[in-house]
Length: 317
Image (cartoon, rainbow, N blue to C red; front, top):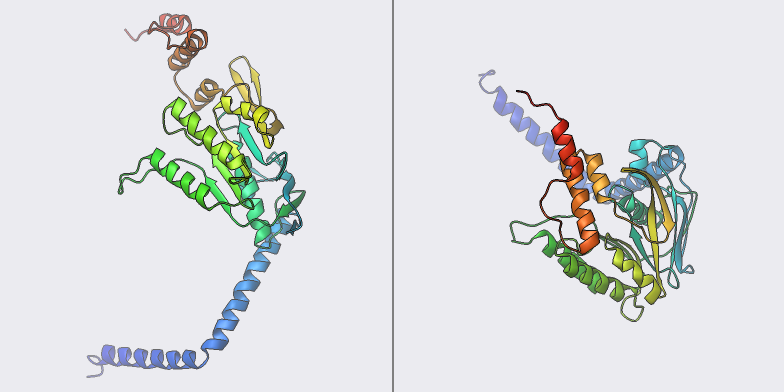
């Protein structure tokens, strides 16, 4: 009887103890909530203090009296943690509501455009939640919201393509942002044809830059170099680029953000770094040369460099 009834007695005892615990908790709910909230706040503040001390963060100045965001030697906290504190290249960032309200950032992929923009967004967010920030100094205007349009994605369940998702997000930003918002926009319009994409990107830029329509502080990364012409037509638009050093077909990313537009996207050079076969690289250079000379894709003949490489390659048989 003891063996066969042991399980039933154990469950009954467990249920009794559980009911007793619930009764005690009910009597002390208010005190437990206060204690849990205090522990949570303490945990958060200690975490802020520890990460700030370990990674050399600075105390930001944040105020409604400011009308700009000024960050000196800002860093991306996640990227620098991965590559090492002394390996990350810091950059300055200054944006206001007057002459430097919209930044058009050009440069090749992998050069650091997205990292730079994300670091600005993260620093702004950290300052608003009461944490020190990864920078030498930072003065930040109180910002109501941070809107981002970064990366590519689609929604197959609802039949939305990558471009449709991009446009939906852009529409949400344009409808809800204010002149106190911070906008981070990465390659708007890339999901459709070149002329359509460029037209949309320019229209979005003009809407954002116009203080009578939106006038939000904006970082806008793009490969449409034609958009850099807006600096001459819209007073608050300024061009910036990620510095790149080129030697022949080799490129080195310097990770520095400098005034002015980029002179090239270096797409073929980046493809070479990614490991694209040499024949494809040589053919891409030939097609690019044809486009630059005539505006049309070059005919399908194999390039001299690729042909010479093929002829020098020994066959197995």
